[in-house]
Image (tube, rainbow, N blue to C red; front, top):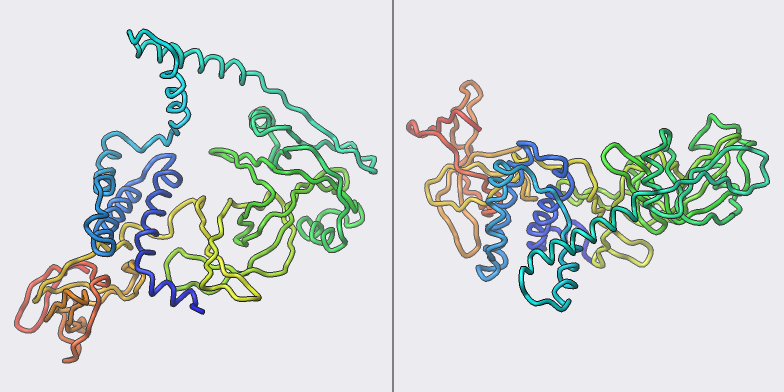
Length: 411
């Protein structure tokens, strides 16, 4: 049974898939509201590293023009701003329906434009009048508090635009009464200790989903999804409305996952299944996540998952961390990364290449260390030859030789 650490060391293609996922994340999520200069530099380095690794690992036949064009996306962003992320499949489907209509084939572009105009106008008219409602669940309590509910996601969005206080979220769907266990009520009390424990009812109403507005755009959370609550991964099994004194609180219940030690890859989080049941306030939900199960790291008693945090506000790496593969030659002075995950990290070593082995994609070199009392002056550490894989070579070192010393002004 392979552990996560062994799996990450053996699978070379994971480097390619990490880059694909992170480039998609920049385009469709972190850069959605505009690219910063750091985003441009990060994407530029990731695209170049991706093209090199595809050729080296998968072969020249996998180097297609779409992958090559990724290198020029940064130039387009600087010239024309970031992509607007508009999904065009709906319009493509409409065009397919238009071309099936009978036509004399004259001025076909005007026919398509008028049909699309009618479709857009009718869509606007059908969605311009949204209603909203304040439903009060029928309980045994005499409280007069109101609960925000909606019958659809579009209605919930319209309500969030008109109402001020929607931090608890807007419940979606038909309510279903449910009795709570004592430990569940205790967990609700721990979520809000300011509430009198005796005022929490033993029952409440369950819903299929809840819509939580935010500054940029709202998010709908459904039963069966996995969310991140205060940096804890929870699989949602229920969304409940509980009466807390004279008010109502919205909570999620589900199964918690325990975080495991990192497999040594920057930005990767691994969790394991547990039997722990938790209750958390909807206010504390950070975002959605996805779990990817690895059969190689699964046992009879537990299952390991990799957390795919696709809604995180920023990537865990920057442009300075991405290493574009460097192809060495004998006599080169190079910077060598101090780790093995394809990122340069904080520790770098200076090396002098004395031989190159193309078959094993490795080099033999001497490491150089900086003199204690002379900044920028490097001397040979030992006479031992060290074998280093190409993937750890960051870039060539700029400088000059002065006898047996290497003088450099930058690192």
